[in-house]
Amino acid sequence: MRMKTFSIGSHCIGQDAFTIIAGPCSIESFEQFQTIVNFLKQEGVHFIRGGIFKPRTNPKDFQGLREKAFPIVKELKKQTDFLFVTEISDCRQLDSLMDITDVFQIGARNMYNYELLKELGKINRPVLLKRSFSASIKEWLMAGEYVRQGGNDRIILCERGIRTFETAYRNTYDINAVIHLQKMSPYPVFVDPSHATGLSFMVSPAAQSALTAGAQGLLVEVHNEPEKALSDGAQALSLNQMSQLMKDLKKLSQALSKSFS
Ligand code: PEP
Ligand code: MN
Image 1 (cartoon, rainbow, N blue to C red):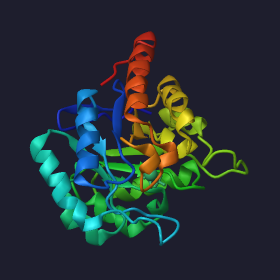
Image 2 (image 1 turned 90 degrees about the vertical axis):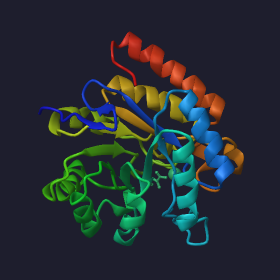
Image 3 (image 1 turned 90 degrees about the horizontal axis):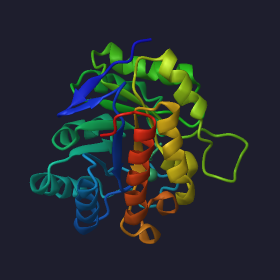
Image 4 (image 1 turned 120 degrees about the vertical axis):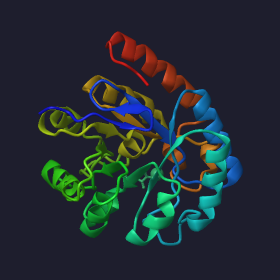
């Protein structure tokens, strides 16, 4: 199947590109997000993620800054040029998120939220569609179909690990899905090695294997102080670790004759 390529801003997503999206699991404060954004821009990362509405398993855990994050993102976008990727978890967030969001992330918990997917089908903004915990490839592609039917075909599939019997790590990274979808789906496939493993020491090797397996990009969690992170600290790369990963990916992409953006 021929892979769709499309542009987001001045960046090409798809077949011949390998695109990095990186940033904190959650935006926690202006200073935290500013530090991470400035660091990533220096590293050549143009797509920055940052959770605003956080879907947490425990309702007592940090739920994201929610509306309080909007002025932080607005101000930083004024200071620095970057494309912002964030999760939308409810249709009621759409209007306000449209102001600041360049790519809408659908989280694993919402892959089956068909009304939300239909709403995203109506807008002219790319959608990064994460695989649900136990979704088959078919269910995942059908979720994408809900977006496409509305007229929006700028869809990125994101493998973020699935649930298996294994409990040594947070999820099982299904690299088969990455390989399979290269042939069986028209959409670019990204890998989220952070949620797919849950352990920071596994993130870089998992990220590099995504490039080798033919993925079109990555979604990576990075934090300036992982041990103090309000969500997903155990899987966050420190700034030094992220810097090293960028170097390793550049070398690997040269060895594989792939373009790296
Ligand atoms: C996230 O990206 O921070 C997240 C909550 O991911 P997922 O929906 O894959 O669990
Ligand atoms: Mn996270």
